[in-house]
Image (tube, rainbow, N blue to C red; front, side, top):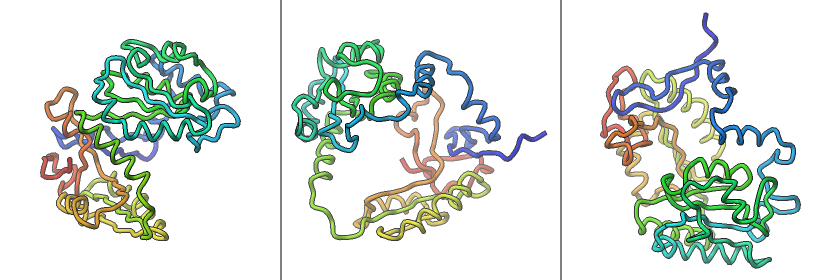
Length: 305
């Protein structure tokens, strides 16, 4: 007997053209979501929701989470991080330093070198080493906002997720020092340029592949209503269905009218673990050029990476 309507997830296997995740019922998804955590990290995240003292992601009482001068801001490098990366990020770090220390000196932290993350270190050990522990964050001990720098081989994803129980955590990772330098320069430029008098440009890009319930649902129930609702205050362009081609996306991103914000709703490409194309192409956007799941074939001419 059927358990109910099926849920369709986005994601196409690049080697087969089939779905990365088979359709499942609401009941099946609920069983997965409510199953017991398999490891200590998962158990800690689950326990976080049972503790009344930490029912919301917020610093200690009285601290405005929208004000870096109150919350503080910190950057976490691996202990053996390339010093050239620290130098490349300097323009952005200097700006954050000025913002976080505007009220009280010491609310900006650089966890670098011996103070950085040590290989194999747990979240609890890292926090203890910096005089912090469980409970709402005190920005005079360790900042509420933390930026991790480096890949998961340097600072594991598990550490990021566990720190995120108490802190607001982000991560950046680029393949070379130049990538970090470009990122820092773009952040500073975006935050310091004069405000525009024109309406911001917003583009929607949503494929609707043939015989594909996932993209049909996202076009009908997500992208089209959003594009209609956000026309007030935005300059909106929509590339939906036949207009969502790979060439169209390339032209949109490289032309003079490229958007300030691009919202995409498509399948993403996935590769088996260890595949030679996984690192370069994983997550590429499947465009309207793909004829749909019945075709059971997909190639680089049909996705944008």
